[in-house]
Amino acid sequence: MDYLLYNLDTIQAAPEDIQLLDAHELEQYTKRGDKYLITRVLLKKELARRSGTPAHEISFDYNEHGKPSWANQQFNISHSASWLCLAFHSAEIGVDIQQIRPVRKMDSIAPRIMNPQQLEYFHTNGSTVEDFFTCWCIAEALVKLHGATIWEACNYPYFYKQGRVMLPENMAEIGIQLFSPAPGFCGAIATRS
Image (cartoon, rainbow, N blue to C red; front, top):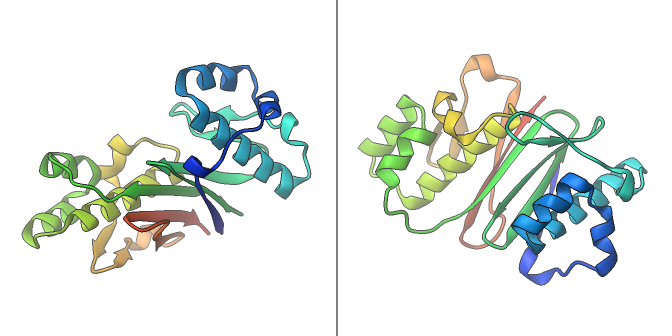
C-alpha cells in the first residue's frame, strides 16, 4: 500500500492535459473546474506509470455510488481543501483526508459517521474536534473500501481511542492506517489483505 499527496494550489494543468479526459470527465470538468481536471490527470498519469498503459487510454468504470475503477488497478481518491491523496494497493483500498476545522453541528453529524459504541465513547469522553475528524476519516475510508457512501458509515463497527483503531474479529482482513497528510489535516487508509 502506498499513497501520494499533492497540494492542488501548487499544480497547474498543461493545455494538453485536457486531452486525457473522456466524454464523462469533460462534462464533470465543466461543472467542477480545474481541481477536477488536475486530479484526473494526476490519477491517470500515475496509473499509466504503474501499468504501462498510455494515460490517454485509461477510462474509468463507476459503481452506483460513483467510485471509479480501472482494469485490475486498486486505487482510491480523497481531497480536502487544497490537498489531494491518491492511494494504491494490491487489493481493495479506501482513503479519506479531512481538514481539521471547527464544526458547528458536530453532535448532530457524529451519529451519521459513528457506530453506537464509538458514538457513546465520543460523547462520554469529551472527544476533541481532532477525534471527530479522525473518526470521520476512519469511517469514510471503510465505506470507500466497500464502495459505499459516508451515510452508511454508522454501520461499520470500528472503535477509535487514543490514536488506536480497533476492528471486530469478523473484519480481521481489514487494516486501518492513520496518517497526517499536512499540518491541520488527518487521514485514514483502509485496506483489505
